[in-house]
Structure formats: C-alpha cells, structure tokens
Amino acid sequence: MIPRLLKEPFVHFVAIGAVLFALYQTKERLAPEEEVEDKDRIVIDQQEYDHLKELWKIQWKRDPSPGDIKALLDRHLRQEVFYREALKMNLDHNDEIIKKRLSQKMEAVANDLSALTQPPTDERLMAFFHDNDDFFKLPRSYQFQQVLFLANETDVDARLQSTLGTLRQGGGIPADRVSKAGLKCDWPLTSVHDLDNAFGGDFTRSLEEAPLNEWSGPIRSGFGWHLVRITTRQDSVLPDFETVRDYVAREYDYRSEMESQDRVFEELLGKYRVNITAADVPAEIKSNFVAP
Image 1 (cartoon, rainbow, N blue to C red):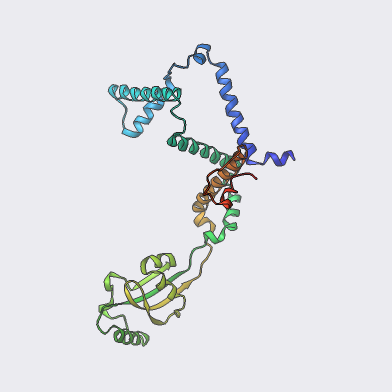
Image 2 (tube, one colour):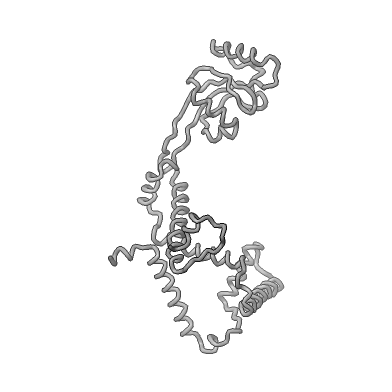
C-alpha cells in the first residue's frame, strides 16, 4: 500500500509543498527578531539589487548608468510599497487579474511536479511515440503534375478534352498552360493538408480516386479545372523516431503537464464543497463539479 502511495503525483505535490513550507518556517525562525517583527521594512540586499540590474540589462542591452539605477530602484520601491499597501487594504480580494496570475503559478507548480515525476527519458519518449502513433503519423501525400484551365475560359470543355487526349498520347504540357495563373505544373510529394490549403478539400479528395501514372480529369478546384497525372501516392506512414524526436519530446512535455495539472486539480478540488446554485447550468454539466 505504502509503495503505491509513494508513486502518486499528489503525494509528491504535498511533499514538495511541505518542504517549501518547512524552509519558509526555518527562515522565519532563524531571521533576526527585529526583521521578523518589522513588517513595514523593505530590504534591498545584494541579491535583490543584482537581480534588478540584470533585468534592466536584459531589456536595454547595456549596464545601467547612475541615473538608470536611481530609476530602477524607484520603480521597484514604488511597486513594493503599492503592493504592500494594496494587501493591507485587501485590494487583492476577488481581483480577476490576481486570481489568474496566482492560478498560473499553481499550474506552474503542477508542471514542475510533472517534470519531477515523469522526466522525458528515452524509454518514456519511445513508448509515448508508439502509444500515440496515429498522432505522429505523416499524412497521405501525392506527387503529381497538373494542367489548369480557368473556369471562365472560352470553350473550356472542348479544350480540356482535346488537351487530355494529347497528354494521354504522350504529348507535353501546352506552353500556354505552364504556370497558368501562377500555379506550377509539377508538384513534389505534398501532404494532403498542404494540398487542402492550396487547392481545397474537393480537389484533394478527388486525387484518391485518380489513377497512377495516367492523365485524368478534369478535377475542380477554386482555381478552375485541372487535368492531373499522379506519379506517387504515399499512404500515411509513421516516421523514424529519431527524425521527430524533438517534436515527440515537446508533445510529451505538453501532455504530461496537462495530465499533471488535471490530477492536482482533481485532488485539490476534493478538499472543497462546490455548490452551483445558478439555475441555467445543465444538470449533466453540474454533476461534473458538484459531489452527490
């Protein structure tokens, strides 16, 4: 039972919180008595001062002058004074901006928990890659040639059929059709997603039924009518892991963080009694948050 509990992310979350709390309490006990009692004292020590100067240098790309130092200290003290006075006046209560910022910090804590409990080792990344192979598969792709006829051209149907016949007999693409409307005739291996963006979904779907290595058509797109010759049709394929490792790692980190946030949220939500009294919240949605 105990070994299983030690593997629970929420136990890690509580443990981390306990350590931070203990460190804070130790600092309070070891601090000089006057420092603990003097709540209105603002201290800018060497570490704080160096931090302020470093932030300034990052923004302005140079060392601060004496006038700049006076300005950054003034800005820091203004922020600290107004912040403390706002807390004394309880101005942080029900402030949406503060709520959002503190919530983001708690999500960051959950993300750190994810990094501690589920580091992206090679074994984990490989398992994640294969467990989600549908997500990482490269989409179907086509390599083809196309000849465009604009929809408003005169006698377009007859010209389409005449050109199709010539192409099927081994003739070349007519000179007046090369880069028609700025659209290239030869397309390298291109994914269906990119083809959808270039021609529209109807055109891409028509390629599924077109024969290989044979001129066919006409096929309609937003440009007009196309005669098409597909030379390669590549089905969706799972790429080599090493070629997409960085992408897999980013997706693993993102999903791990989201899962960790969800776990921590569910655990913490259990500490609260939620009562949704709004009348127009659907019952099936309300049941997700309100305990029976």
